[in-house]
Image (cartoon, rainbow, N blue to C red; front, side, top):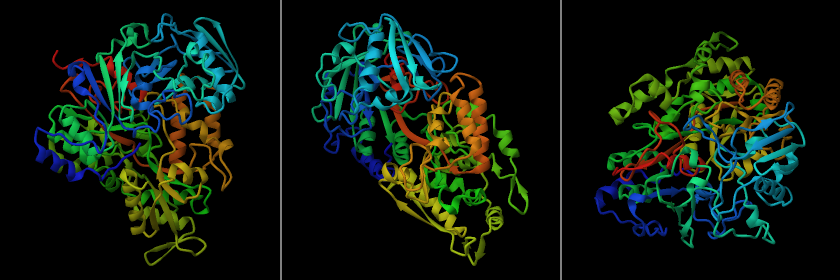
Length: 638
């Protein structure tokens, strides 16, 4: 997710004030779609956050790097797969049986999986969707390196067969209780290919799939040859798609617009030419709600932003000698003031988390709330005394800090504050941090901490070149330096591409935890944390254990998750065990969720999900789960 937090500021505010109600701004060379060609009251206009693709005519999203931008409506409105798991509460629970008619069925040792499919589903050209499409999708990708899901299918599948037209049986190479997750959309998933189309193609890697034959409720109407906009039209037979059980999508037309400038996104929404914005800067959101009475964010007031199921944190390279003692890691945590980091990074609009679980979706109900008593009672031995380091009021304090500026927009109900700002965080305790370092053999000379080897305790923290993560890293470095540990922030444009995978860093502000959000199961990221995947220093690390931390107790948790069915209550118990181990060891310092300043406007459409009343879906527009939002919308004029 690309956050350019300083680009808006007073620029957009001044532009809005100067232009009044007759705004007509250029899109930084972006081509505007022919909005007036479509009835506005029947058209939903959505911000596509991606830049225009290098190959706008290529709709074959099964080819790695195909060129088309999936969030242009293709993977929201046209493609489909077996299950969806929403990062929020869902319409009737977060798990959707989509092309599958029921949840997955494993045998006792998780070496076979059977899928029952919905009957009567049609591709947009009238051909029925059957088990043959699923079998073709898996076998074609297994046999064609260069396709997106080729490697995971080849690694897991021994064979796949159509038992009948609506039943698929997978035989797996090894036990895998989470094989179904390949077909379970969180943001993305293994989309099903139309066999009757691709089997006639000589080279599936070169095929452009243009126009795309749709399995979803919309088909492509038209698009900009430069890739700035794509227009989709509701199928007359939408009732023959897997969305039908959840209701009819209300918009007849859906337009996805690539608008690179955050200023322009804001202006277009004020003008009524945009119904949903993927992301603004904090300053942009504050400006929007002041200028447009029909616009709002996930929360009705401050902090507005939607907390994504991703957890920004301080990541230590645990293969670096200076971070291998947990007392050192804990000392560095206690030197931080989460309130100041929230204000510096998000202008106070952060949702803090002291535990290694993003505070989003159902997680506050499953993790943060139930573990509060344990956190409050948690004791830490500093080597000199025993302390209770957790402060359950930090979120309340941040709300009080922003209330003078934002007034009634800041919630006053304690439960609402905890949902928006977080439950609590660790107390900044410089004295206790010093005791921990002393117990670990460190000494202090003047205002500088020295390592047990007599060298100054210094390190570099890598961070993204701009945005909230840059602000986070810069403020953390400043706080550590003030406490006697000289830390230098360094902007790194290759952080996720090279630095974290290769381990060529000491510390970083990034994330190695991404969850389902709407489900307590942690396998989305946890499997990759097993010690069997930890690379040797200098070798490329398998995502997502960037911290290269390993522990026998962690392995035991992961190994039990592997043989525990996805929907079993035991998964939540294992999740709690994981959280407590992470608190004890502090291999990373969790800080907050990745809050996205998504906005929507109710001038033409109502029924959007809200944090306070109907948190049924993620409003961040590039998620494939947004299709369910369309079934809940109603024209405002009605």
